[in-house]
Length: 224
Image (cartoon, rainbow, N blue to C red; front, side):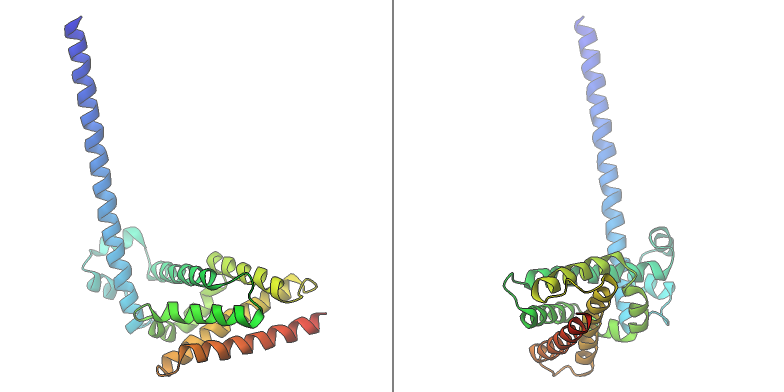
């Protein structure tokens, strides 16, 4: 009986050690994967911010990353996939910055100034962002409004617009267009600053916000 108990304990111990070993191996694989993906995405950002999407090649990205070509194809397949992933991460950062900047008591102009200021400061805090958008603006525009992450950001804006302006009578399509133009104005402001780095961010945010507010009020009045 004692021998059986010892055998059972030995089996349990061996099984536990095997599970722990498998867990450590799995954890190591995940860490290696995360390291390689981070290296490839950082390299892709540098390449897209210096050469642009059109001129960039997978070989350029792999060369900067020092990760093997096989790993790139295993995780991303094409440069389009990694470009889209980088753009999604930027959209998520921008959305978070906008939400943190807003206040429940904001009026239309105040809300837009806060939002535009938050967008510009967040993007300009990312090394290479102005150049990335400048070099790849047609690719950004082509992808931006088809991404679910952009739709979520536009939904946030539409809810806020309804709170600050009488827009309940505006059709959904018209609301989508209004929100999209506000987002586009923010992108244009970033491109303007990239060409004029001495411009004050707050001044640009104020101007772009006032332009957006005037357009929103005009569109709302016409839709009444």
